[in-house]
Amino acid sequence: MGVYYRNLYPEFYTENTPFTLWANRYQDTVFRVVNSARLFARGYLGPASSLGNVYVLNQSDPRSIANSLAPSDLCANYDDNGGGESATTWANIYVPPIVDRINRLFSGLQFNSSDVTLFPVLCGFETQITGRRSPWCDVLTEHEILNYEYAQDIRYWYGTGPGTQLEKNLMLPFLTALVQRFVDGPSATYSTGNGSTPFLPNPLIATFTNDGQTSQLAAAIGVFDDQAQLPSTYIPSNRTYFASNFVTMRGTISFERLNCGYQGLHMRIKLNDQVYPVPACHGGPGRSCPLKQYQSMIANKSAVAGDFEVACGIANTSVVPVGQDKTTFLTDLTLPWEYVVKP
Image 1 (cartoon, rainbow, N blue to C red):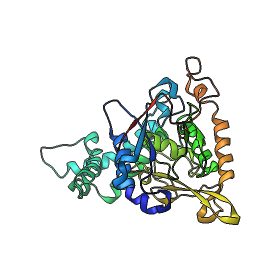
Image 2: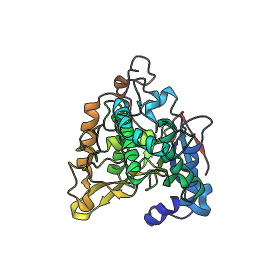
Image 3: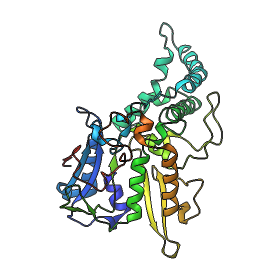
Image 4: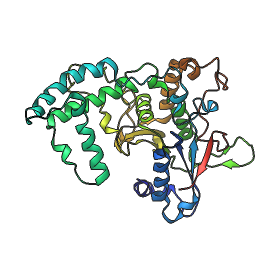
């Protein structure tokens, strides 16, 4: 992935210069997110990887409220219900026929619903790990796989995505700060918290977090704003929301700042490298949105969502005053809840 982005935007990096990127700490003893950032830096920088700095954000530090890559971890009201009743309803429709079909193939061996719903998981993970197609991928029919895919759509839509009330807004502080970086432009320099060392971010802004946060961010960016609520009893034929298009291994949400000359600055959004237009604003080049208009749209979403701490139910105990719940780590490398690891 690092090599891909180096080739995609070759003018973004000057050989043998420092490169900054960010990663969610996730857990003390689970390093997959941080290691993803480190490996990306190795591919992006090549022999100059020693010049990379991965700023790891401790999302459990109370001072990091709305200022990390996993703000939901400090949100007391956050509840990923895995899709809730809608997920249960759909599972009760699509899983029993699969169980019956598979169990008819055996004598003296019976699988239950929990077993069967793991088969496509085994397909995906074993294929990813071994680098070759897993035989588990042939256990379910194409129709059954599509039903399972829709189960994952429901899981994310109603668990951490657009179908939620709170969760869909939790990445808005990050998105607001990210859009501001695009508005400021690639030459902007920022004063850090200690007031001494100025920070000039790289043209490529690379951040790494988890699938839950990716789903929350996808819900906030506007590309699914015209998608109706997903039904729990059938698969709609015209949906645009496919969790498998962005909650994947190497699942990526990308933002491109397009300088279109006399047409001005625009924002274009990609999910796993595929352009996704914002329904309310896609008349620019490449189905992009004027940057200032996109910034206003995100500001309106944030205004409706209200203060992060109030929505999360932590305003009375927070060490961060209400109104200061915003993301600054993209422009300040001196925050006490971040530390550096090398690629």
